[in-house]
Image (tube, rainbow, N blue to C red; front, side, top):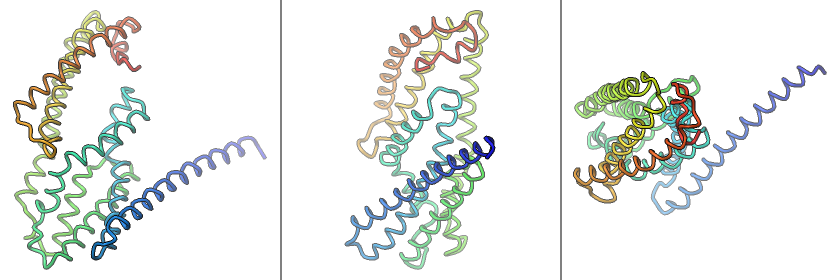
Amino acid sequence: MKINDYLKIERATHISRSEVGRLGTAIIFVAGVILFTGSKFAHVEQSYLLVVAAVIGAYMAMNIGANDVANNVGPAVGSFALTLAGAILIAAIFEAAGALIAGGDVVKTVKDGIIDPANLGDSQEYVWAMMGALLGAAIWLNAATWLGAPVSTTHSIVGGVMGAGIAAAGWDIVNWSSVTSIAMSWVISPVVGGVFAAGFLYAIKKLVFFKSDPIAEAQKVVPYMIAIMAWAFTTYIALKGVKHIMEISFLWAMVLGVIAGLATLLLARPAIRKRAPQLSADRDGVNRLSPSR
């Protein structure tokens, strides 16, 4: 056997082992969901429906991990701000925390904000419609991930619920005002986010990159940029993320954001100052300014 043929076989078996490992992990996850749901809700009438829904939900969760999480952490990994292992760890913790702590509003909107269950014939029909919506959205996400298309899980589930409701009771079942608001947010949010991102990039270019000593200027500007992000994230989480645990007013959310921003500023300054002497005084040095690199 030629050495090239041997290497091809080795590569093929390596790929096969990786695929079997991923498939095995997915099967174990689904089996765990079945066992947990079956034992936890064995006393519930028609508990088999809960088990089926949990399995579809597990399938959806894996597709969210494969598609949506990649969208979230892709820029950070691609820019080398995070390692792949670090990104997966952060995603695992905060995606789950976000769903548990701040997912109530999303669940409520999906449950009765897109279609009105009262307009369906009976509760059983509503159950099957929602299961169909979840399965349809999961299959679409699976197909999109296989094709390499960065689609939105939110768009998928909203479309799935609309489609299932229309198939069950016609066009009138859809709450078009709510759907219009959701669709407007899909347009407004990226535009507003793009404007802010462009503003930050312009400021970085004018204040850092176009200076004679970018590293020296970055030591002055970058800590404030990081502090602004910490303030924005903390304020948002205080307003939206923890309101199901405790009610926080807008004023207190702003105060918490300012505290987080100041703390971040105090921590970022010495870390960046320590890292700066190791880097070249050019744009490449600024790109490598992260203390973790």
